[in-house]
Length: 282
Image (cartoon, rainbow, N blue to C red; front, side, top):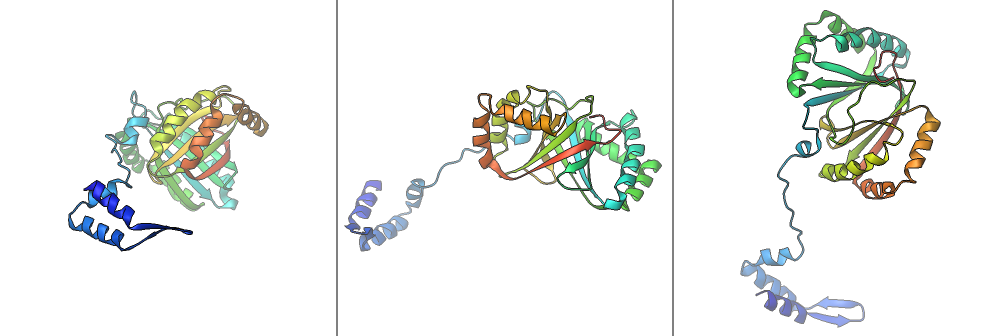
């Protein structure tokens, strides 16, 4: 049947100076193809078969030896309230971090220096995953000091948003480090369906970017804006950042990583951040 269809189509095409043009036998052949129910064969010439994945990318890419869940918060503060907001956070957030009754840790807390202005960024880790997150939320509702903090904070904010994240298995877990440092949060909005491909390239790339211990943590979103990746880096200053990033281009493999991962990105953003006084990441 396939041979007859192609022969019929071929007879229905005639060569002219402007290219190939169809005559009536092509229409007859396609109608005949439809009539005999052989459309699936004809479509198979043009449709690429996709092998479905057997597991979610969160199971493939996340660390399996622990059960950490991360929450990142972005608070856009009224410009005239930024100092008061910082003082409020420095008074309340460390007490939650230090209290063993709460299975959570404040990884870092910053103000954006370059990027979106008058913004605070907080990164929390919940050891125990979603049950730990739920436990913390329930206990905080009973915490009078925290509820007063929330009410006061609400008067200072223009907007806020958050995401729940998992950490890539090939990145280091963020740990406290001495300062002073500046931090860069590079956020990538990927095309849906490309997270595993991104992870495959960066599993090799992170070895290139560990030379100066600048890699702090790498995360991908689970709830909130999906297919979002956050890479967190630490540098002594802006010139150190420039020198470190330029040095990566001199190492084998970095150009290939950039070449193959750029097409996966829909949108990207960089924030340069300064740690607050009580941030564990100095």
